[in-house]
Structures are given as C-alpha cells and as structure tokens.
Amino acid sequence: MSILKKAKNETAYAKVGLYGDAGSGKTFTASCMAIGLHKFAKCTKPIGFFDTEPALSYVLPLFEAAGIEVLCFDRSRALSDLMKFMEDAEKECSIVIIDSITHVWRDVQKSYIEKVNETRKRYKKPILEKLEFQHWGAIKDVWSKFTDRFLSSKVHVILCGRMSSIYEYQTNDNGKKELITSGTKMATEKELGYEPSLLIEMIKHRENGRIINRALIEKDRFNHLNGAEIDFTPHKGVNIKNIYNVFERLEDHFKHLNLGGSHFDSMNVRDSKDMYPDIEESDWPSEQRQRAIWSEEIQGLLLSKYPGQTSSEKQMKSDLVETVFGTRSWTKVESTHSEKLKAGYMQLKKMFETVERPGKDDAILKVEQNMEEGRKVA
Image 1 (spheres, rainbow, N blue to C red):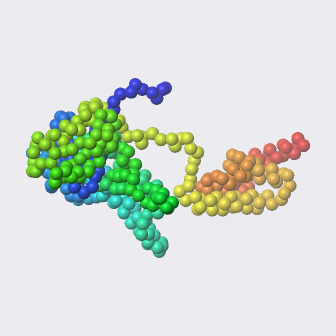
Image 2 (image 1 turned 90 degrees about the vertical axis):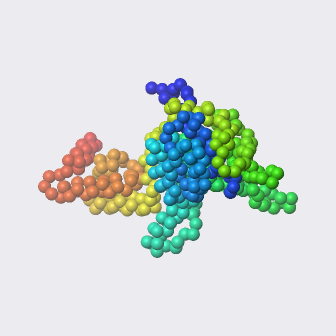
C-alpha cells in the first residue's frame, strides 16, 4: 500500500517566535499579536500565559481592554512545568504565550548538571562546574519533547526569547584570528530557531528622541512577509486601536493558516529502529567484560567434559555449541549478548548434570548418535 497521499495545507495553528534585546517590545508585541489573532480566528477560549519573567502584570490591561480572559502559570521556569502547561492549555486555551523560553532552556541545562552531580556525590567523584560534551545528547533528547509539542499542539503558540550573539573567527589584517559577532539568534537550544513558521527579531530603533519597536521578519514560511521591517508606532497607556494595528501589520502570515482545519500530528510517531540490528551499548565496557567472562566459562565447561583434542571430542564440542547457540562459529558466539551467553552456559551445565544421572539428556544423546553414525560411515 502506498504511503503517498494528496497534499493539503495541514498548518491550522500559528507557531511564532519573537526574540530581541531588553526593551525591544517582545512581550508587548506578542500580547498584541495574540489579541489580534484571537479576534481574527474567532477564538472562544482564553489565552494562556507561561510567565517566567514575570511580565504578565504589565500587559494584562491590554487583554482586559480586549475583553479576553487570561489563564497563567507564573511560578516556574522548569521544562517539566512547561510541558504540563502545554498539556492543559491545549484543552483550555485557544492561544498560548511563552515568555521567556530562554529561562526554560537554562533550567534544562542547570537541572541536568545538578542531577549529574547528585550521582557523582554518591560515588565521591569531583563535582562538575559546567556541562561536558557527552552531556548534550541527553539534554537535547529531553528538549526535543518540547519542540515536538510546540509544533504539533492544537493551539496557537507564541514564543518569546532573549537575544544572543552569533560568534565566529575572522582573520584580521595581521593574519591573526579574532572572535567577532556575526549575527544574532534566540537565546535557546539552537535548533528551536528553525521551527517557528513566523520568526521575528525585535529591535529598539531610536528616532527623533523616541524608541520605536521594529520587527525584522527573519522568516515567514508562507513567504508574504520575508525580509520586511515593520515599525510599531509608540503610544502610552492602553489603546485598543493600536493593539489591533500590531496584528494587522502581520496579518498576511496568519490569513494563510488552515484555520479551523486539520493540523499535522507529532513527527515522532514513526522511526527507523527496524533498520538497525540489535544494539546494546548503554554500558558497553561492562558488556564487553561480561561477554568475555561467559565465553570463557562456556569454554571451561566444554573442556571439563571433553578435555582431549581428538577429532571426535572436537566434533562433540562443536555440535554442542551449535545445539545451544545455533552456530558453529565461536567468533559469533563471543559476540552474543552476555545474557544469552549466560543462558547458554546454564543450559549446557544442566545437560551435563543430566548425563551424570541415570538417563542422558536428549540433546547430548542426539549429538552422540550423530557422532556414532559418522564413525560407522567412516
């Protein structure tokens, strides 16, 4: 059966990212965007706010002016709490704002090294001051659960993050390498910046003695706002007209969503595990030692019963190995998982114990019968 299907727009929910320096208007712009989207998409549920700053108190009058209820969680920066927030918000809210995702990313790193050091303390090992290379795989695996939830959740999501610089080395006029700033990005796990369908950098633009919040559209996957620079006119207090004006300047992205339609599910449902053979490397050095030990135990058991080097005894040992492990290759036996080697050793031991009592084990009888028939033929 073919896995192909007719293509259709399956992006029903906005996934937006905003980042910028302090005072660039991230929280204000995200709030205005959410209010405008709530009206545009004819949403009926409240707006959810995961508040790590906390910043909601300062923009709450905007939501009140628009007559929109806000449900918040403002007591945590933990990823575990953000995941629970997303689970609840998907049921109870139409739109969610996460401000700031930078705090959550820092929590993930801090929590991991604290967990590592708890283990190191138990074994009286030196405490680590910072994360090491081998730690990042586990951290990214945990973080990927949020990324998947962000993309596949059936709710509009607006992420706010702080700005960080991108550095690279450049050779100067004297031929020496120097570290320079080559750009900016959201201060979070680096791959998250690729995920939003609308990515905006907010900057403070000074003009005629005032600060203008300028939105630089870094990415619009519908390709209607790419590269645009949008200035939001500053105003004091709550002005409902200006609130909706922020959304209207960005509306070209949102009107191409499949609003009210289907939205794609998690991309992590399917995988390629079946393409790999069995892999057991969680504690590889220990596994290697156990394989070597049980291989030697098996060899020792066989030699204790058949210590000679006659062709018949070699044949018997080879036949027993094939009976228990399904192969005549000792190299393949040595590469077998230690648990299977242990089980094979116990099976051989039981077979030999049966021989020492009246009546022989069927497997050994069969092997000896084959050897006897072989001698008769010879």
